[in-house]
Amino acid sequence: MTAEIDWDALQSLSEKAARSSEGPGAIPNTEWERLRHALDILRDDKDWTGIIRLRELFTGLLAGDSAWGIPIIQSLDEASIEAARRLDDAAELGHLLGARGHNLHRQGFHKEAIAAFEESAANYQKSGDSFGALKSIFMTSLCYRALDNRPKAKAILTDVLQQVKPNDPWRGNPLQVMAWLTRDEGDLPGTEKLLREVLALHKRATDSDILIAGTLADLGEVVGLQRRFAEASEIFQRSLAILDQYRGQYDRQEARTKLKYAELLMRQKRFDEALLLLDEADDKISAYGHYHDLMWRIELARALIFARKGHIREAILKGQMTLRYRRILGLSSWLLVKQLVRRFLAGTGLPR
Image (tube, rainbow, N blue to C red; front, side, top):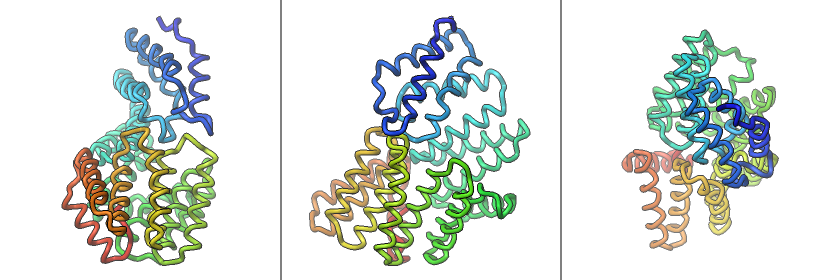
């Protein structure tokens, strides 16, 4: 019976797991059992409303990216989507499927993410939330870019940007992806200009620290590609300083920044320093074991460093790990070769 559930204790667990400097990884399994027990009771009772309530308790935690690898959190996500379907709650389904799409995209399962985002958008439309639908459709542009369908990504972004006012802070999100596409084309000054515009928009938004940190990482990368190394290093340090305020909550984002910083050091032939940063990035991400999209990029960077240092055996091993992670995601090895050649010719770094 739901009377057996200690909601106050679950609230405390949620707050503790979302606390900066601790993070969900610091919570003992015995405490997560409390959540598992509650979910089992609600499932047995077919208490769909209760399951949604339980999911809402952990919304703040799930807004980060460090909790999705915890098995009970994955079970809660699955159960809440099922509950929303049972309740025929289109608005809740739009929200939950959008969150799932974000998680799938972060892991590198881009085709599955597109399906989740499109279903999310359909449910938002059904509930009358056109802006929610627009946000989910926008997210498919990131997935299409990752799948190397840049014309499709650009078409989506162009349509989205036409529907958002120039002074709307949210505009920074699609504009940032447009900056990535501009970088793909080799236009580094144009990319930098767009990213600085994105930063200005993010700074006007509420609770935008993580968006700012991510944009600074992109800006540091592009500034570094223009060989302004000292300025790029300072920008990366600003990004990491923001993330340090949320220690434990955005480990994937921190690993992403450190990877980009390591690539800057690689371009300066500071290989040993770059490897140390890659180790730190790996430590941040490997604990979760499912962010394969970032893991293959870390292994690729290591492979290239080892090759440059003449450590051929280590380079081959890291190259094999790169391909292994990409196979898990269903990504083409030939596509990776094409991206590497394109990036090399354009002078814009490693594949994205």
